[in-house]
Length: 239
Image 1 (cartoon, rainbow, N blue to C red):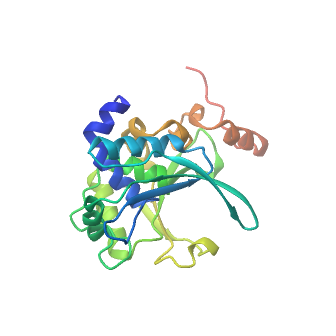
Image 2 (image 1 turned 30 degrees about the horizontal axis):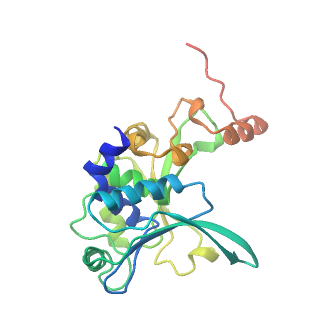
């Protein structure tokens, strides 16, 4: 699918996927949408979301790069922030019913919103660090309560990702205020289907998250280097 077709046909789904992960809706009235990423590597996502917002008529400033001081040193980040609009106020009421981010009861997960959630709060890994073997994908659900996590698991199953697991992750400095520290994992039996579903919507700077079992060529150079050093790179026979 061409990027311009994705923007015009599925832009709102992408925005909701971003809200599920890194994006925030201001509590001020009218509200506004904003999302920040450390560094500049993921500017393509911010420009994509900018196109999605403007495509549905929302007045939005282009993404920008900013500098600040963090932990005593310089810190560069990229940010997208819309202008205030009643549209975002209505979204704020839906996604922040008691002032905290929650998944709306009528929310329907789609491949596009799933891909944007994956880019923001998801990841993937080669099981047992063996590149070319099985793969798992995961979503960090630290901001969501138990009923929201069950809803998302049900939605993933509705999309065909039936092999799931979850576990409690240790709270660290960055998650000390989280409602939970739950990671939901898409396991081996569903991973090929999952990756095929989200791959068309993954932007270039996040392609490293797309891994297919039995395809070591889908690993990053850094992953391959680490695996070869550790002796866990599975050299696949040529066909």
